[in-house]
Image (tube, rainbow, N blue to C red):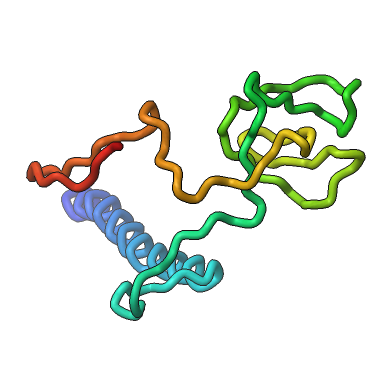
Length: 147
């Protein structure tokens, strides 16, 4: 009778592990499909026709201030400076409507900048060499380059 009791206790971890593993396998893909449909991504590359053209969003602006552009907490020259964005860096504006020349931005840090120091984003510019990385596949095939 004692050996039968021991057998049951040894069986419990195996059964519970199997059930947890099965639940993970069947629940996770369902969750991923729901997210994919919600966000509107295509599920298969074979369904695409032709090439997709990368476009600069309308909310993209480029800093055109040689010494950088100060980001402020509020749309005012008297507001506290919370950071500086370097020249030629891209920012994301939240709206085209400005308050006395100030526009709200969300990236690279949220705050307000003076619109006079923002230009349209350059679509043909290569990334700066410091942020360019060479990509190589594990088999040694060359997949990309830096300019």
